[in-house]
Amino acid sequence: MKKQIQRARKFFDEAEKGVTELSSASRWPVLASLLLYRKILDEIRQATTATSQEGLCEQAKEASHVAHCLCKISYAP
Image (tube, rainbow, N blue to C red; front, side, top):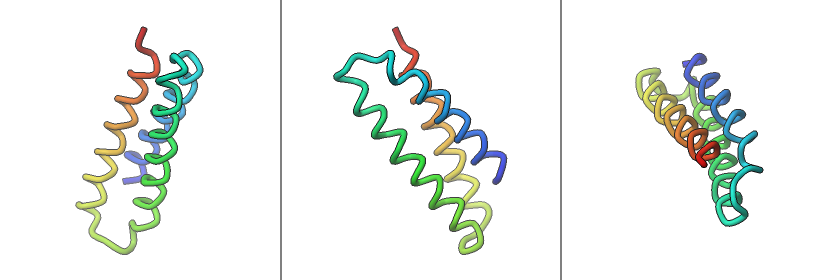
């Protein structure tokens, strides 16, 4: 679980670096998504002890996938 959360955070950080390269119309939606998904990831981390590891692992994988997609969007030409 920790590895999935760390992986997602890495993608979020990488995607955020590219936000300034986006058009102004795209910048705010992508940045807002990054902030929201970071908060979701924080909630998943905090809930680790409250729910099953299997369900959390799936949520962390989804968050990691979203972060990876945002990273691709932020570096798209």
